[in-house]
Image (cartoon, rainbow, N blue to C red):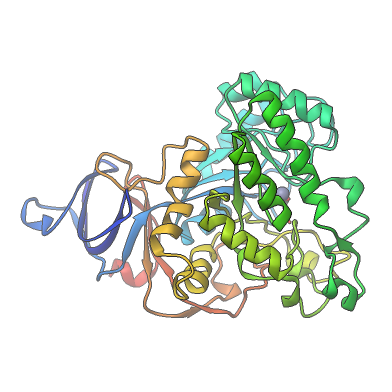
Length: 430
Ligand SMILES: NC(=O)N[C@@H](CC(=O)O)C(=O)O
Ligand SMILES: [Zn+2]
Ligand SMILES: [Zn+2]
């Protein structure tokens, strides 16, 4: 089938914004140009009304909860939420039940993904069996089955020896270690960042060193082993400093930052409510500035959501009780666009880079490029009308986010995967 997306503002690879049309045929981008309707008869033509078209966004960090916690999210609802946010390729974390730590369990999960997902999911395998043991998974077989990397996200790898052996094995299999960095001996039961707000609210704090000290350990081990080491959800200024120094020293390290850590600080936590609880926690203004500068100077490589859905009863309690995590797929682009592009902190080109080609390059994913011959994985955004983030509109099963009711720009109006519309605001199809 031939489809023409007409009259868009197209962010092409190499970040040139051009006005024109995209010709889609057999799921791929066949041509990009002006007045393409003249040269060909299309089965379908959609007028984009000069809205922004980008390569489908790429998210290196989501939690879809199936199998094991389907009351929070399923592959179907999580992938729909991703599509609604403009994401067409996502990497899903293995903190599931069962954990996909054997070939059989990994293949069973991949079958569910093929059956239910509306976007392209790359499923991560864990580093150790059941996430918190010291027994390494069979990295060779799980690499052959397609894991883009190994991660115990949700928990840190507590012993240096296990991390060292894991890095050596991952390197042998040409896969990165994707690290949730958290030294549990430095947690002290904390539920939010240690600082003035935790003291004011009387809540146990998490010091920055809980994250950064494990990054320091791992950077040395990554240097020793030569593995590609990717750090999840960097949140502290010390982490940024350590990664910057390591990059300069030639260590093969990459990292991601989440929208909430770029936008909010612990001062935005107005009360003891689970909606503000995530791991790592919202940090200080100094940390937030370090994250922004880290993106700008290339220390931080990309933006990832850490979409972490939970049930409303679970989150509707004190931060001491609620689980860690907030949803992010459906709001990421709007939040970043509104908070940083509209305020001239980042350019639109930078933001699209950090949400498409950069994450794709980190894991070598065939995604994030809007060019002729590439799959027609595309996202279309309305940059001119504000809308409100409303829980009822979410396609995710969950709506646990501190950004509810916020007015933002940058609503996704349509998402295509391999040339098929997987999500659309109704009016676009009229
Ligand atoms: N980020 C979170 O606060 N929670 C994540 C786990 C994780 O990403 O560490 C989850 O699975 O809920
Ligand atoms: Zn994590
Ligand atoms: Zn996570």
